[in-house]
Length: 235
Image 1 (cartoon, rainbow, N blue to C red):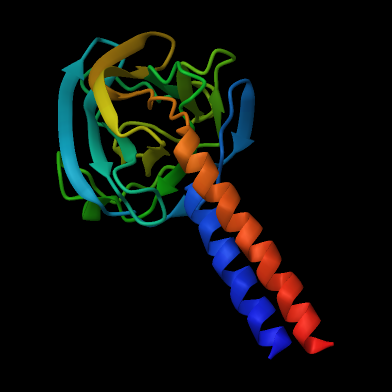
Image 2: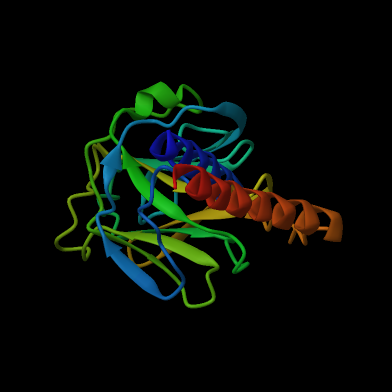
């Protein structure tokens, strides 16, 4: 009985702590000033569609269509938290046969914004703005020292496999933001092509009210007393 009571109390306490933390079930975290390999591949997280945009261009160096989409509340994240999806189809054109060496996404400036990044293998299930099942994976992802820019790297112009006729695996940046504004999605092959996109708005800093802290403290004291009493009964 003693063991059962302790197990039940610890389970309740753990559930409460996890609920307060609001952490994601997925964690390919990308912090400011860091670079990670890959990143990992996974499946479309789903959620509630919020917005999308696409841009078809030929700037004389690159040609193709850039796509972006925003979803909220995808699998494994907090309620209302936003996922930002990016994909480019490199079509090439007469005299335009460059490969993509890098992509960048702007503005993720606030240190309060977390960024977990993945590559999506079933991009067609995103279902908006022409997303498709891409084939080209990036070699690494990085976030600038001030946190503002999240990028993917595909190699140099000579080594990149992101050539005309290919589409990259959809890139998703999972955030803790619940609101968004306009942003920028850039494709680079020596020159940069900027495309309309979306960016997170930093979540407000929530300071617990004294009453909430008191309730939390009271609950912890109650748990401690329950443990103590269960020990006395066992003796």
